[in-house]
Image 1 (cartoon, rainbow, N blue to C red):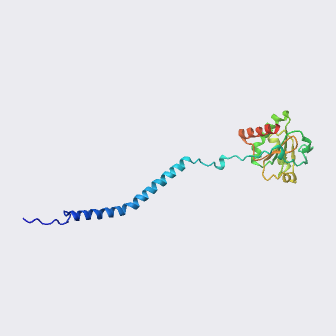
Image 2: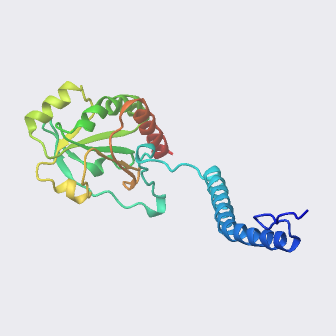
Amino acid sequence: MTQDPPEDGLNDPATREAASSSVHRRTTGRSMPSLVFAGLALVTLGALVVVATHLKPQATRQDVRPAAPSASPAARLPAVDFTLTGFDGRQITLSQFKGTPVVMNFWASWCGPCREEARNLDHAWKAYQPRGVMFLGVDVLDTEPDAQKFLAEFEVAYPNVRDPTRHIMTAYNVIGIPTTLFIDREGRIARRYAGGFIGEAGLKQLTAWIDALMR
């Protein structure tokens, strides 16, 4: 009896080997790039995980409070002397307070942060005046009636003067209000702060800088 040969011819050992080799080559040729790509993707993913694990989030602008530089005694510049008229009509000269620490605050009645910090400044004045610290307010860019209303509204007790010509504001390079200068006993600028001493945190910062000024 004669057996018909198989239609696919794979019963022949040589044929099966050739077919197997061909399939292996085709499979290998298609899979190698895929394997390489997958390997690179895993390596990249791993690197990103490592970087993300070790990086700390950067502080936002809201997280950072501007710091006021404090000059060492040797580097402190002398405060510009001046004589201005107070709201009570008396003349006040800055140099008359030499030998006494001075907290000098530039403000205006229309300034929001000035209004917010007003009670803190007056509170600090009442606490530190018996300890030999002088407070002086300098009203700028304002009208006298509005400034008078401001002082009455917040019951400001320490001396205040007007700078109607902005001469003193310019001499101290004040470009924004409120701005507060801390002047040491020798009449030198120990610290400058542009901003308001607002709320409990503001009062705490203000008193800390006055304490440092008294040392």
